[in-house]
Length: 144
Image (cartoon, rainbow, N blue to C red; front, side, top):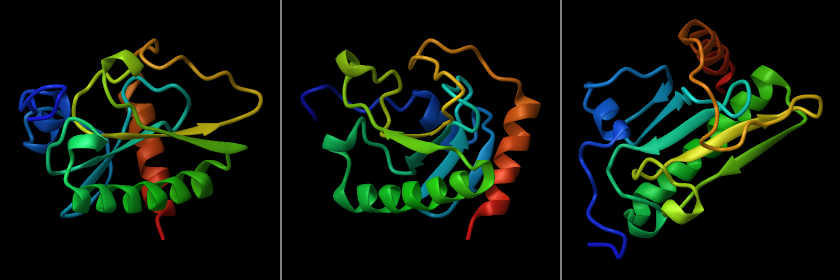
């Protein structure tokens, strides 16, 4: 058990991975799932999660961390190609005091545009699913 607690099988990402909750998927393989953040901080805000559960990077198996970071790099390149942002922020939180709200390891890929403000983490509104679906399709099409 990690110092932060036991992995909660009822978290939203675990539910998505079991097919019990919907998600706007961008990419999936045997190790990872990339999906659109339903509370985006910016247009095309994408998440990458490992399929094996771990609360954060500190208590996730190292092999799973390697798979997820390779996925983050690949998906970030596709986001860059699809949306042409001025930059890309990649974030990962470990623990509630620093902003982690879903206790399943996940990385945020947030395109940054100089003329668009970024919504503070955890303060956005739920996005329109049609918009997220269109953004996901654009990112998927840009995967090399």
